[in-house]
Image (cartoon, rainbow, N blue to C red; front, side, top):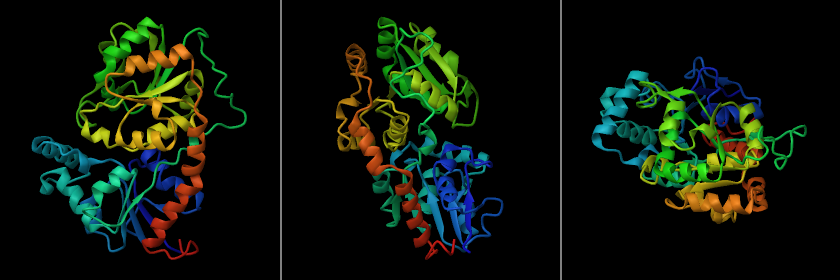
Length: 357
């Protein structure tokens, strides 16, 4: 029986980058991942929480890197790149010998057997380093409604007369509100809208590790007129489902000057659709591609059109998730499709049949 070693983001495999990706596949295929001694395996899978150089130099088996963020497309300044590598070295996920984190990634991508990414745009970035690049999105089945859950049209706001906007994400991604916060602050106040932010109460300031930012204080600073109508809700799968039902529509703003974020995959948009929420989003390459293919291009927002777009959707009360988006999910983004893609990656890495895994 083939053994799959895995170096995860989190020891308990609770991180979304674990449970929505290779861990989800392993559970569907009844495969036990070797996380305590990953090198004692036939195939080694490394999350982006791994020190690639350390694990790859110790590996004699095929190595698969699950690289879901587009670091190689960011082109950071030399100083930023060096500091990122320093912080990651302190955290145990890199080494000073690489000088920059970009150099570490380039070496890892060029020397592993397969790189798994989360979008077509990311695949294009990796191809110069490795021709074996596979695109596999997150499995969002944990967000699907059960039969006992209320239909998405039956909103459950505490204040039935107030329309709520939905947003979810890591604390450090709240920075993407800054480029449009003046517009959003104005229309939240003008139309008496509320907003749910599914995130954490505080988060690290620098490099995702150092210092602390109080989320409520940050919101008050970005939204001086409307902060009293914005509720910070602790992130959990249960809360995602509950507050999605209470919300009219979702938003995903992305700062167009953030090259790293502009190359993010469509995962967050798809997760909102799985929750049943029509979503206005910045026109990033991945969102634009999916918006066009799912025939919801009207939900793509240019940099200075947030106020106009929100006003329009609220005035029309057109909050229903488009059927074309639902069809797109069913045809392109279901668990079995994703599992078959992982099947292919594992087979090509050394397991010729799943009887061997």
